[in-house]
Image 1 (cartoon, rainbow, N blue to C red):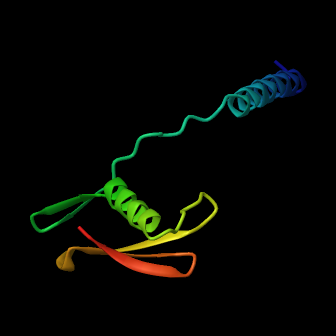
Image 2 (image 1 turned 120 degrees about the horizontal axis):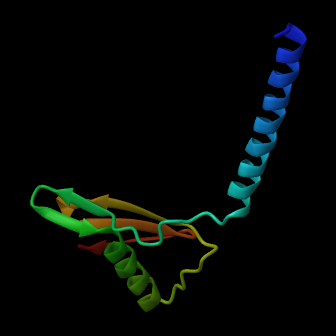
Length: 100
């Protein structure tokens, strides 16, 4: 076959492939992304094991007992020190610690 016919055929194939790719990308973007809703984050140190959720819950309980309400907008920072069996935290300028 001639080069001209081969070029036309190749161009047509590329256009079809491009349209298929665009349609596939559009389909992927239209579908909602699935997120992992359940995460268990364990911290192990020597023979001790801590679950991140339990530590955060204990901190929230202590803050609530101290009259501090933890909201979604605030930033909670936690520093775990397993050798002392304590978790130190700061929240909106308030700091403290809990026993593990």
